[in-house]
Length: 250
Image (cartoon, rainbow, N blue to C red):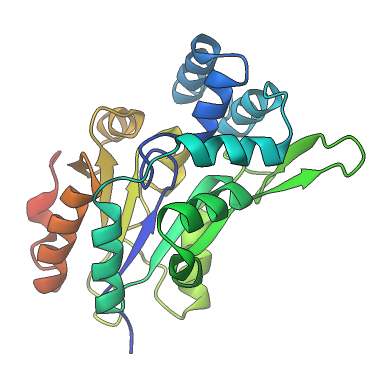
């Protein structure tokens, strides 16, 4: 039996309060001013996310295990996520993390912040990391190296749906056999996924909203997963018939 809904979500700055990659870059790498310059260049399409993100990561001089240890001390979970996760579990609704970050970091943070059970229940679709065993130098290994995003989130969503025999006509609710599809995100790494679900949750005050307004992509805002939870529950209970009521830029 198909679930009533599927929740695809970004990880950094969405499930967590801080973006772990930005945090590493600002505190251990070349700092916030340069990071913001790169972010603006990506948003204005002067450079690709893939290349800008790689430049950020290359500025971090410490070993990968040290990066994880540092993040475990500082990264916090969105206060509404745990309750939302437990509700989704009770309803048989999958949560799929679709991230432009690195899977080993997400794995350790998820385990630390949510628990061992979450590792079994939440699928992580992300980039990998390659570590030189002799020098301990590390680099990101992009899931989709030919894509300007490094990880093409739109493609990952379609691959997941096809793998589970759901329709990849993701924005239509006419196929009653298909679950209601949600995506939650906050920044430039989510641009490729912004058009791929029935309802996009875009974090208040972040770059994803700027992009949605510019490109006229329907979205609903959230401040925390408490907001997402309230809206998702109402939509699922109505079988998606009220979904247009939540779109804020009609």
